[in-house]
Amino acid sequence: MEITRLKKIAVFASGRGSNFLAVLEQVKSGNIAAEIACVISDHARAPVFEIAQRNNIPTHWVNRKQFSAAEDYATFLMNLLESYKTELVLLAGYLKLVPSPVVERYRYAIINIHPALLPNFGGKGFYGIRVHQAVIESGVKITGVTIHFVDEHYDRGSVIIQEQVFVLPGDTPEELAARVLTVEHQLLPKVVKAYCEDRIKIVDRKVIWEK
Ligand code: GRF
Image 1 (cartoon, rainbow, N blue to C red):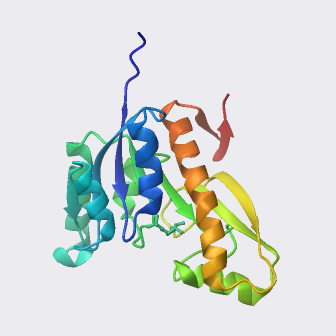
Image 2: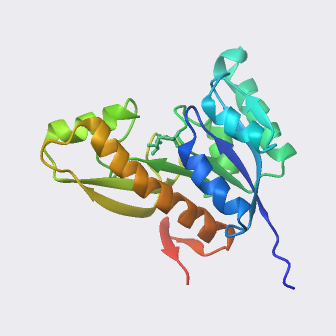
């Protein structure tokens, strides 16, 4: 029997954790060759912690406000990730900027999911329902999902995959968010699976998918 080495994933999430759950289910079924090493949140009572705890995954509450110096915060996060021998950092609804020393250390090993087609409707302040409100207000007819590598800026970095979702006449932000979320739950496990199988390559800062 072939023994596949499991990649160690650290998940950062601020809230509900439905994207984390979508990935976790495929890890548990063996479809994704990974181990969820830990879940880190900036919120002490984030619902995502309950999902992790139910599945015996270590959780850590880490917030910039717990540290007086920014570099201590970055060092703490770095040591935490190192302690789990992290190979992939997954931002699954994480609202904070990852400190630049962490981005530097895990270049092309941090993935974020965004509920719109970047570079539109992204950046600071574009999170949660606000993204879908802005999309509807703008009058665009197509939105979607972007999964990308993380760099030092909000919602930038090389795009790994995008998929479109139509904005329908009369959509409320909540209705649109729900349709986008369904696509997120399909795309994120697909990307994580490909990453764990070393099928995502970077050439000249652009992402190439290998078969
Ligand atoms: C998702 O829409 C994701 O794209 C965005 O934050 C939301 C998180 O939802 N970054 P959940 O916590 O995964 O349910």
